[in-house]
Image (cartoon, rainbow, N blue to C red; front, top):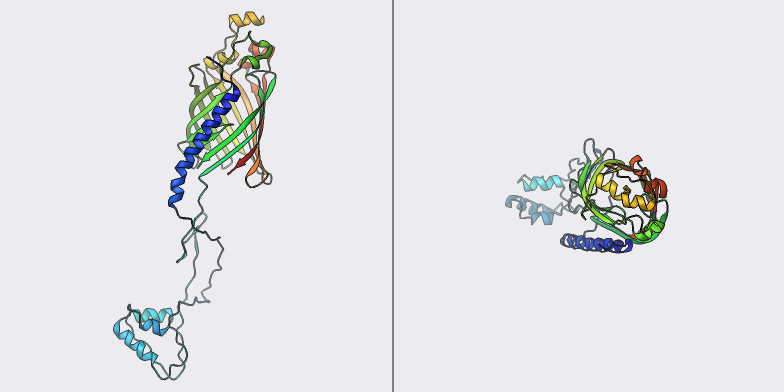
Length: 384
């Protein structure tokens, strides 16, 4: 089978990501179209009204109250007479209490020789928010205004280009640098795809528990990658893995997880790793995190990358080596995003791996490679 080049796989990854972004946008558009755009007012804290400062009720003119069909006929007649009273000179306003009395069918107080005085409204307390016990403040809708709660951004994506420097093959001492595209899509933290971490589908999406499906890519080794070893060491195809993961958030910043993956191209190789992911305190606008992991492989995976059969041993002038299932690598990785504007920035990643004992004892690594594996990536990204 023809060996796929890294550039071909990058293009395939970008095509898959673009198709995924198109599908997510198509799914997202009808939902946003059904919801009319609302202007959300900024939340301004209102001063609390003390009991000693009554809130003036809504005022009505006697004329409009007299024509109110909600009032009993007898009450409307009393209001009409009140309007034509000879001592009625000052503008009379009905307070909320008088209005309620009138609607209930009560008697309207008679005018005396003094000027009419408005009836004092009962003490009211303006409440715009109520405190939820042991929790944040919960907004209460203000009458006459549509509440506009904040909604989290449902779809975010970034596109860019950069470079990656990594070992020529798993266990190699020499590195190579390759220009790469950068693609990152996130739909509600449920479906995520990037050219760095692969595909993740969070099917649990709980407050602390997360888990679901993953898809990743493992580089092989071409004749060009092998360099002087080409023709003496078998090449390996790049492979795609499918699997599952489970993750638990100990705190908001620290998560522990476990992944298991299997090659889908018939190699029989399977991979498993446990990891701890920590979000570091921000440095100004810079967001960054560190991740430590331990990876292991089954027998097929270990022999795929580190075995030396009899023919290869003869070509290299070394002994045969056929490892079994074992730990393969310990690694620590650092990722950061350095914004340069509201929608642009640099994505940076660096990792250092140390091959485990079984892998580092392979003649390929011991005589022709290195047990230390370094990786560096940087890309300029435009994101929305």
